[in-house]
Length: 155
Image (spheres, rainbow, N blue to C red):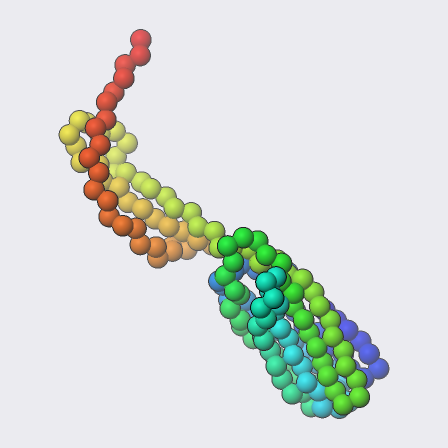
């Protein structure tokens, strides 16, 4: 969002698509402030909840980047980033929408060999990866199974 007025210029940048539960960066800049200003950036979720991402009193040129935690979501959600600048004489605000996607995980099960003989113990490992293919620390309950496999011959 870039906005010009006779009194000031401001710019706020944030990704248009983010992943819930991760850290993201938001940058804000105010240039040529002619009076003391109050800058406020909030993230408004679909359900009505609101998170203040940045709140600053600005008296001169201002630039800051901050990291914030994106709220976790179970399904894709649209949130609104609301920027407001208030001075003694003037007030400006702008809104933009961003998409918040849920975290995605990939779980891989692997056995220690491709074929087993009757009575052999099956050994396996489980690896969970996130969307960036980094390991995800997920605990699985240990389950002991008694499985009887049979082989069917087709002629």
